[in-house]
Length: 270
View 1: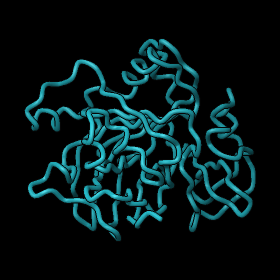
View 2: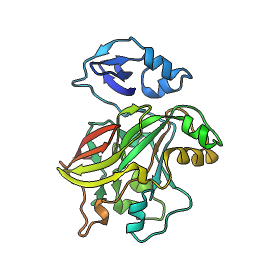
View 3: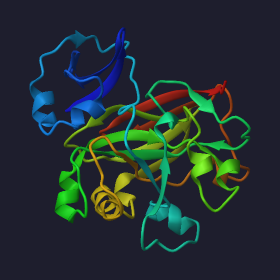
View 4: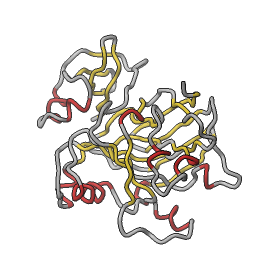
C-alpha cells in the first residue's frame, strides 16, 4: 500500500495511491492519519474522493513531523573505503520540519553556501508510539518506507563538530513521494544531471531500520509520523577529487528500489 500527502485546491489531503487513482483518506495529511490507531485499516478501506494520478502535487510526506532524525556513516562499504572502523553506535543528528519539501518540489540552495551536496537515503516512518522498544516492537512500529535526499551545505556542516547547521536549511530536504508499507527496500541511487553518482544496496546498512528504531527509542519516545533518514552510501560530491557540488538548475533524482523516486531541481533561495 502507498500512502501520501498531496496538495489540493483547499489545502492538503492524505491519499492512498492506487493503480488508477489517488483516493482521499479523510485526513488533512499523512501525519494526521498515522496518529489514528486504526490508520492501516482506515487507509485500506477508504472510498473517498478520487484524483487522477497525473499531475498530483506531492507535499512533504508528513508536513510537520514531531521529529526528523538522521543517521551519519551507516553504509559498510562507504565507511570501510574511507579507512574507518564500523561504528559501535549510530551517529545521530536532527532536522526541523521547515527543511522538508515534496518529491517534485524545487530545492532551495542554502544561501551563502558554495558546497551544496547530495545524500540519497532510505527514510523510515513511524506508525506506532514506541519507547524502550525490543527488536520485535521496533519492527512493528515502522509504518513503512520513503525516499529522502539529505541535501547538505558542507561548508556550514564543518564549521563545527556538530552537523546541524549544514543539515537543516529551509526547503532543502525532499521527502516522498509516498510511504510504502510491507516492502523490502532494494538498491538506492542518486543521479545528478543524468550522471549516476551514488548506487548501493540498502542491505549494506550497518544499523538497519528496526535497530535504529530500537536504539532511538531508548533516548526519546518515537511517535507516529516521525521520520528517520538512515544514512547515505558512498559517492557524495564532497568526497570526490575534485569535489563536485550542486548548482542552480541541477536536477537530482533519488531512487530506492521498491519504494519510489524523487526528482528535484535546485533553485536559488529567496
